[in-house]
Image (cartoon, rainbow, N blue to C red; front, side, top):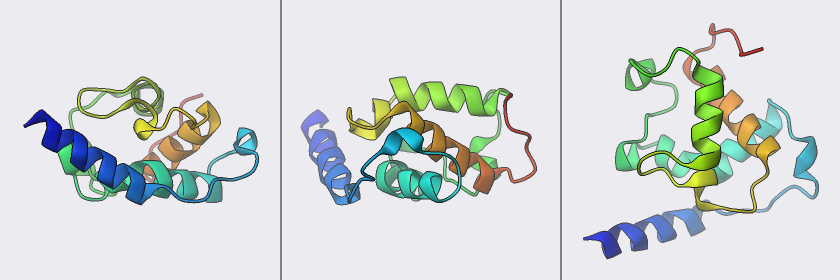
Length: 116
């Protein structure tokens, strides 16, 4: 069973790969966040694969930490349960992870204030 999980994760991970910005150290929310989300996170968070909460559906996120942004960024960087660290891509910078998580939260909770 675990080898099937690994094969599926690799297949979806490679499918999510795309071109990368030349300098992702300057990534911020907005276009860079959308691009980072699309490249590294969407494969699971668009479908709920492996139990991932679906972006844009607040009910999937209900009951999670009230420190939304900080906790999500930490989990995205280090991994959490079935979610691999950095979407399974060790080359993704902290700035890109932060931009992707900001984008995910801005879609799911457009009125939620950002962490300071």
